[in-house]
Image 1 (cartoon, one colour):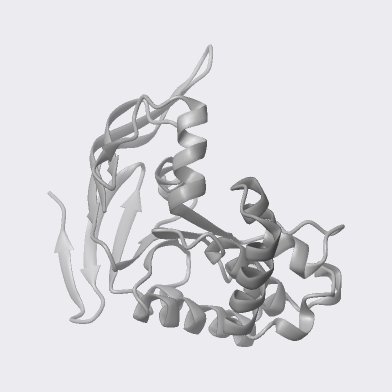
Image 2 (cartoon, rainbow, N blue to C red):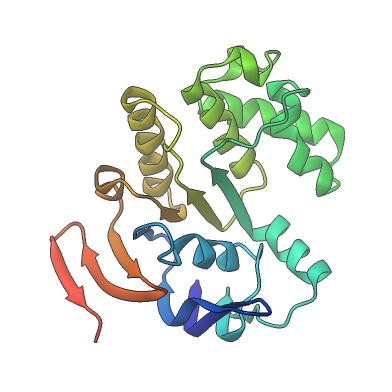
Length: 233
C-alpha cells in the first residue's frame, strides 16, 4: 500500500541546511497498524506529513496504491488525499462554530456527495462510534475523548484507504486516551490500515510494528506481537 524508498527532506534557509529525513525507506502493507516513535526532531512528523501529502519530499520515491506521489501537483495531491487518506490529529482540529454533525459531514461536502447520502453516512458513522446523541452538540460541549471520536468519525467518513494518526492521545487523560487507542484497534481489526506517530510506548503497543527514528533516519523496527527488534544497518 505504501512504499517509500530513499526519501529525504531538506529544509533550507540562507544560513542553515537541515536534513529532516535522510534516505528513509519503509513499506506498509494493506491492513497493517504501524507506529513511528522518536524524540522531537527525529523526523517522524515530517514523514507522516509527506505520507499524508501535506508536505513534499526533497528526493526519493513514495508510492501510494502503486502510484508515485513525488512530483504530483498540489491539485493532484488534494484529490489523492480526499479519496484515500483520513487524518486524526492531536488537537482534534474540529471547527468550533460547527456542530458535531456538520464537522463530520464536511469531508463529504468537499467530495460533492449528495445531501441525502451525506445524512445517511453521518448517522451511520456516528452510531458506529457511539456519538449519535452528540450530533447537535458543539465541540466545546464535549469531553476530550468525545472530541477525538468526532475527529475519528470525520477521518473515516469518506472510507479512506489509510488512517494517519498524529499523537491521537496527546491531549487526553489516560482514560480517554485508552478509549481512543481501543477504537483505533477496533478499526484495524475491521481492516483499516493505520500509521500513527506517538511518544507513548503504551500507545505503540497497540500496533503491530513500531519504527524508531532519530535524526531523520530509521534506527530499528520492533514487531510488537513477537517483541522482536530488527536493527537497521
